[in-house]
Image 1: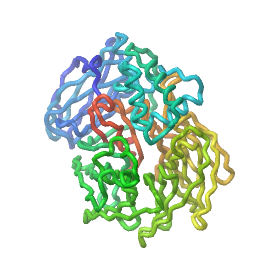
Image 2: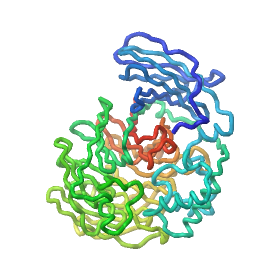
Image 3: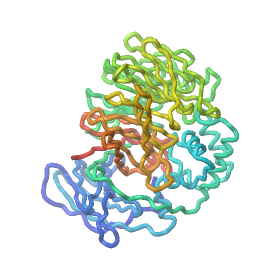
Image 4: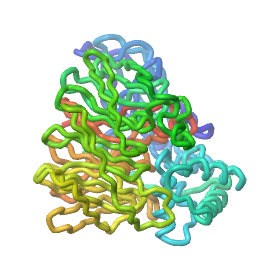
Length: 553
């Protein structure tokens, strides 16, 4: 998303050829208009086709260094909060280094300052009547993209917001007419087209300054939802609609493998049930959502529209479909247990499934219909994971506000009322501690499943009153740090359990909406970034991406 009032700034400085080194590199410094160094500026090198980029941060003295294998004519961009972007064209030759200097222009006009804010700041415009209403709104309305991005903060009449709210909440969130009317009123009053000024923090963590970010754009992706790494070839596999995207992180190229129809009609099993096809899925048959690398070397995928589990052999490129049955509607998130059994949530039909890849057998478990939010349209079983200590299966029900446990032998279900709103994609660490993202309350919650004791940690905000909406958590298998996707402020978050401390990493792409972490063997932390729709006024550049964070030394 490139804002008209925040175009590229003027670069002062030149790119100079220097001594030969093993790989091309750029180094330099970033200063403000008073020639003072800028710390934490994002310096991004963009390939000519704009489908690949590398980003580093300037240090406390404003210096930066970026090693790269890219060659030829490239774009070098500097970006910092409350400053206009600056860019220049560079011509990198193999084994050559270069120097660059950026003098950043400080934003001064109200429109520039307003347009430079993150979605989380613009979201403060909404004047909720209570904390409960704010939590409900976050759970209902932040699942596809930021609220406060370029598209949503434009002034629009109530009729526009009425149609938008009805379309977006057709299957999810509240179906209560009074609640929807309140949302329309909130949105139409908040986003009036006038500039909005908030003083956001520009503090930077030392860990952020050592990091490097790599991004691959995914042309043609509708919503590249979940990703995984193939341990055999090191490539990244993402699912989207009726396709598998395979990104080679060495060659920096992406291949698209279409999923065959396999007898599934357009819209999957929704038309046969007399149900409207969910938004954005009219041309899809399978609606692939979540994938995991299985013990047999195949990927196993939940096909939300088709109501199946789909396997994909990365060697032969063969697909195979397994019907879930049991009235299953919208298979969602899938995880393997230690015995090679796949467990998955089934969101719209309020179920959990158990799938044995060896036999192809599937068992569907109906969940209780109890809820903490009677106005929700569906209970929406969402995240799921398996305890490493006793094999028990734990899940969340997003709009029901519940956390549940399934006995893997008896399939008995027990549910709990957590002290949080919007439990989403939860994960265990190696010790058996369960980490839960509270989407509605903007917090990370630790659960001791033996004592059922909860501990809440509020996500860092850029200014008082801003909202974060933690979507998913994952635990780095190497360091046991907890990683959180939280999609309102263009940042990634990690949490160090022993220190009880968050670290934030600013991202170079505006409108970033990360989904699910995966961890390549080289130590990076990666996630798809895929708002719906992937339009230029929703995410900068108008395409889904894969974003990887290298923590450095």
